[in-house]
Length: 284
Image 1 (cartoon, helix red, strand yellow):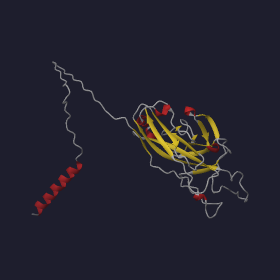
Image 2 (image 1 turned 90 degrees about the vertical axis):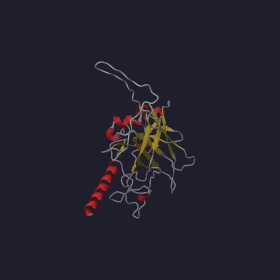
Image 3 (image 1 turned 120 degrees about the vertical axis):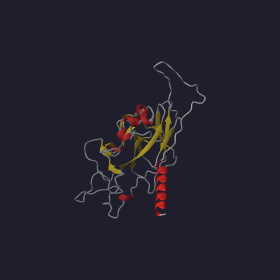
Image 4 (image 1 turned 30 degrees about the vertical axis):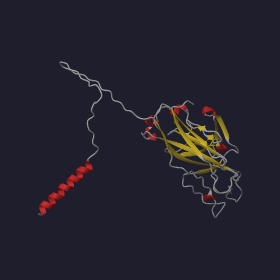
């Protein structure tokens, strides 16, 4: 009786394992409605078959960061103006080497490229990290450690320029899917009464880090974020060109860099609403 029970249990376990291990069933395709192909010969017979992959035209966007918060409250510590400097590596705030934004050449589609207060970003060790740099000279940038901005040196003297306005950077990944022959990403500010005064934006398809796209101030007109040459072919094509950064996938992971200039902003939340639009096979 015991042996029979053990045998039954073993059979059930084997049947369960077989059921779990089974995959998806594929039955033979028939050529119903198509003319058959046939041939005969003494030593060779040849037939021809056409294999077709038919896909719909699709354009899609995926954004998981629907609120990008530049939070100054960590700079408002009890030991002000020596507040705790803690942005967890996801935001950098620096004083610029210039009192004004630096304009650099004409951008793509006639858009003016802007470096906020003379700052820009470059490659850091390991994509998608970036490094905030000084465009005006090689001096290191001074980090902002308190709000309102002010710093004192070791002798208790005011650090020149430490009461100035400053700029903060954050980044996120925007995923794009297009299987057309050409695509373009645009962004526009859609709020009519937003209180955020100065916002800058740039999109880099996978790995260009500023060399292939322009950094722009987002005003009242839509911006085209990707040069035509970088939007050629399906997004998966660019992934195949740069699998290390783009990841061998159909969706294209682009690094979007956003900066804000902190100046005479009101307390509370100063907001702007951005709308990203991906279009396929359009003429620009």
